[in-house]
Length: 93
Image (cartoon, rainbow, N blue to C red; front, side):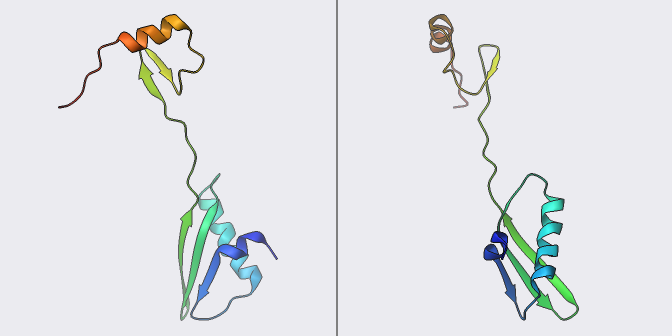
């Protein structure tokens, strides 16, 4: 049994495993590099309604600080850290 089948719910009937996997493959093809967190396949006569939630994509925040695009300041030397600390910070209020 495929692990992805654990996150799939079929409503209003049953489907063979091969058909469920085809719907999963369709969603994965439409959303490359993403994983399915949960999926509901609702049978409605001759129609099938797919509802799904994708797993969040981890990302690193990138900011523009003192003219540089950075994620973190972990690798900055003391002079660059002082430059960031001493800069004038503006806000909207």
